[in-house]
Length: 310
Ligand code: NAP
Image 1 (spheres, rainbow, N blue to C red):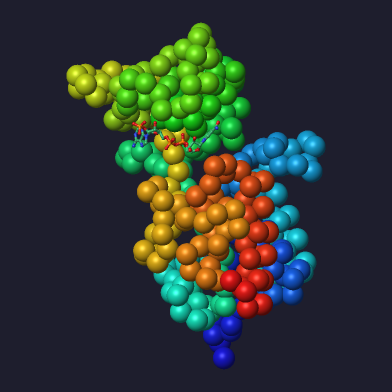
Image 2 (image 1 turned 120 degrees about the vertical axis):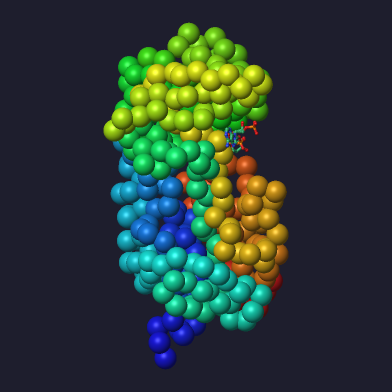
């Protein structure tokens, strides 16, 4: 019997805070648990330089270290992990089958904790300039732009709160939005309009990121007139929402219009024995603290399922 033929009580897809909390709870409950993670532990959290809103770390903690601690805590109770990419799943079967780039895995229950990635603009230089002026998390990297000029793209709550946060650090902030008003809640509108160092660029899209080895500016196009202009900036934060990692589900579970898995606070999905935890679940607040809560709820529900309940 190869390792892949083994039957796990619970397989957890994704090694972020939801995934490793599920692994911790499962291992402590005596379940045979395996985490399948793509690269290394932490998911989006691992990209945060400083996490100050996760209780228990009075000085804050960087996301990579917190992820490593979560992983090692789960391993202390016997949880295991593999670095592999999930390609497809068969969730209605019994056992449930997970196809990865390193073979097939089988489990009685599955927790989907694959998270959500920042949406990209899709501009040619965007990927190459990641970490060299282009960023997706102002609360992680904003501090590098003290006294500098930055642009934020987007018109939702993330873009608005990113622009507010950066206005307290940077010399100047451009907020570039493709419409003539923000989608963000009203609470942000007045402070942004009043902030002396925030310039709102309405009806504008970014058509090019200007750069040498780092970002030097943006080319903007007025979506109504087609006119273009250039602005100089040292950084660009792309804050246009997130894309849940659910493609591999290939229609097996009902999703929200944005692609998040429909599941309530108990994390139960439409398929018995399948649970959705963390940012991949349709929910109001996506934070580390809500992700870990989901991980615990998912295993509680999985235990009930394994015991013959619903
Ligand atoms: P969002 O609400 O989906 O907004 C995305 C914004 O990016 C929209 O303004 C959209 O423009 C724009 N956009 C999307 N694709 C674009 C593209 N290719 N080029 C240019 N602009 C593009 O996403 P979010 O702001 O990340 O918020 C996600 C969820 O988290 C929301 O439910 C939000 O309320 C919540 N959240 C809440 C807070 C809070 O303080 N309570 C903070 C952050 C996030 P259009 O308007 O034209 O569609």
